[in-house]
Image 1 (cartoon, rainbow, N blue to C red):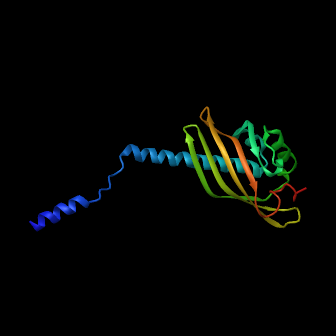
Image 2: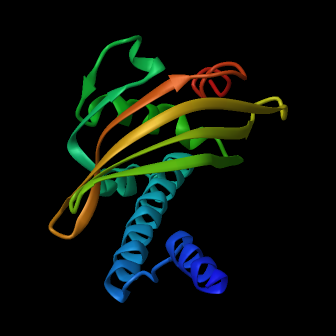
Image 3: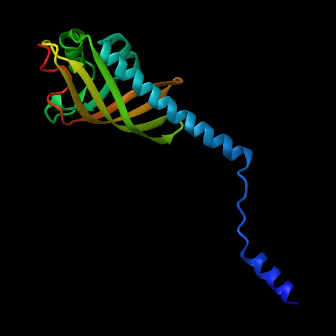
Length: 171
């Protein structure tokens, strides 16, 4: 009898870890793949900025892109004209740039929208050959249209390490 009651007690406290069904595993891998896609798009956008490639930048960004960034002095800017100034006058003068995205966190907001937040470290050489590092905190909102991700809004906060990459060191 004692063995029977012990067996019953054991059955009552047994913890069962059900296996995830295949469809749930598939959904998790799809979610992970979409997150990686957003990180990849963000890397491509930053590469276009680093190389001064305005044409690539405009293909990745919505024409009505909105932004809060230190260069806008607290104002919301819309469209590409504000950004084109920096591509035309500053970014092309910088030859050596390395960017690192730290701790990217992607929020999937549906099938066709996502937000990414990360810290961006930008290393560059000034006109005197001195190396500098600039840190900024960024978030970007992505929207998928016609099976193509586009950046529709970003917010960049100036961080430590001096002025934002290139905007005053390369003149």
